Image (cartoon, rainbow, N blue to C red; front, side, top):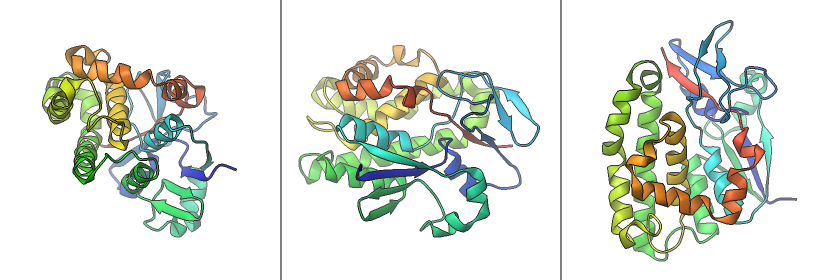
Length: 260
């Protein structure tokens, strides 16, 4: 039996949406098997609460578990997944059992972890993906924290990006990505990883962000040659390539939380 278990909602991003839900918030519920399922292949419609829908094309807001899957797959690990349905979550019993009232929940043998960044750091230490020394580990943490800021910024502006400011936000992207581009360029002229000469958990996080932005802004990587080459290098890693091309990744349902 695989030592790792990821416990999550069927739609990536729903966990954080639920934890922040207010009266003015509408959550897009995207359930596997629903004919309105919204995934990377780009179904054109999803649900905004009971009886409401909107045409959304291929735009979406990513969740957090895919980075863990990418890392585990690239490291040749297997894992199992347990899905928490919306009905089970709203009953409250399972939510009350979660340490912070949130998922994802990650189990490594007898160790149970919550908080996605904690999980990534644990996996980084477990597989030697945390830099070769304390200095590189500090830089890996810095990159991951910067990506967390970027993730939250996109989440806050998601509704505006979809409805009004997609072109404007794309104009702002160079500024948002500049710190990571600078770090990449400083490391062997951008021909290596984001930190040091070996992959770290921050690389998987950065790759996930860049791939998600590619779905929001198709072709944007053409303006970022260092990132474009970086993405191509990471996607060519055999085990990671196989995962990114797998139906499990391509067809995974997506979700978003939008404040109205």
